[in-house]
Amino acid sequence: MWLLSKLSLVKNTLALLLAFGLSGAAAQELTVSYNFAEVRTPVTLTGGQFEWTPTPDLAQLLIPGSLELEYPEVSALTLLPGITNLLKYFEGKEVMILLDDKTTVKARVIRADLALFEIAGQYRQIDPSRVIFPSLEGVRFEPTYQWKFTGAGGKTNLSYLTRGLTWSPRYTLNVAGDNARLTAWADIRNAGATPYNVPELTLVAGQINLESVQEQINYQSNQIQNRAVDQASAGSSVQAVGESAGLQIFKYPKALMLGGGTTTSVPFINTPAKLERILDYTGGFQETPRMVLPMQRLYRVQSDQDLPAGVVTVREDNRVVGQARVMDTPKAERANLFVGADFDLRLLRTTQVLERTNKSAKFKVNFTVTNTKSRPVNIRLREALGGSNYSLEAISLPNLRRETEGLNSSATLAPNQKFEGSYTIMFRY
Image (cartoon, rainbow, N blue to C red):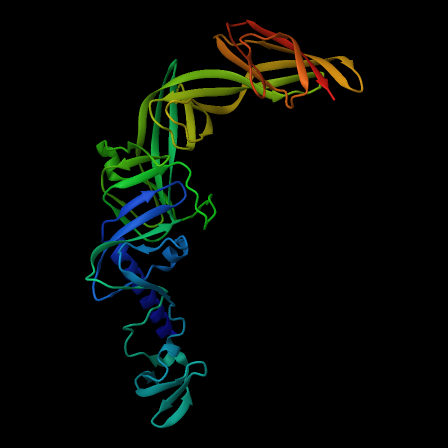
């Protein structure tokens, strides 16, 4: 069995060397989206044929149908299977048999499935672990892609899409008084074992539909380790390039080595932000006579940078006050970060039935909030009414805005000031 173990080691080593020859040594063009990446590797074509053997983990992460040799005169692409039975590969050929610790004899493989050999004109079944193979040249242990091409060949690119490379931004909103600053790191995850040598990294933000795979892929690996690259301390950061085909493009201008099974983080955003703090209640119409409801803490943020989707950690006065996910947000819009319920501000909502018949019902809804804090607070109330078969009467809400979903009211309350409002609604059945 020691020989089979040796062969297994050789097999894995050869596969890694074949893939590393393309992925590790050569500089590659890498474009990473949220849940996949496009890899373009320079290759040189000669002799009318080109072969590429990905490592087993890379082969599993390839997106079907995405492999392309960027050469205009390709005539055929064949996927050659890997050798799963080495003895079968040597049927009809000579090998050496280890009879004991010192003695070897020549033998010809007759039937691999029966472990049947011809030795000096006699046929014997031999334990396959005693076989010594003369050479492994030409043996493909892993599936290999083979292109046939015409023309002179030359330099071109091998490109493919892989699910093993993904990225996401990781934000921190630092708040001190009325000032806010938004910082972020771009985390590039290499879930596979294949390393990538990248002279300039391109990151893409936005939705890209891939018909051949699920759009949302979640990778978790115990081998992934967080690390910041050396270039991060040198002041380099990801730079926004602009919009392309409805996507936002960002580039990291320095070379990176993305090791297998690692997460590499590079500086992404560091910019002042406009901030509005709001205590928010958002709910739908309910007939419940009396409800005491917590107000939700909302940070509305706007920066001079486009914000790709990611998680934001909010820190105020050097304390973490919550986390929230921001969706893809262009710089012209505000991002809404709901970070949890306020500890002490409560909304009192009461509903009174004014009349009810088989065809209609009329209610009066009242809201009351008192600012128990020592500082002014911004209050926002949103009530979704639903449907269209209703009418509103006697609305008494400050800074009222009628919306498609219902009512939107807001106010700034000084310490100990009370917010009071009401509306009357008639539903028809």
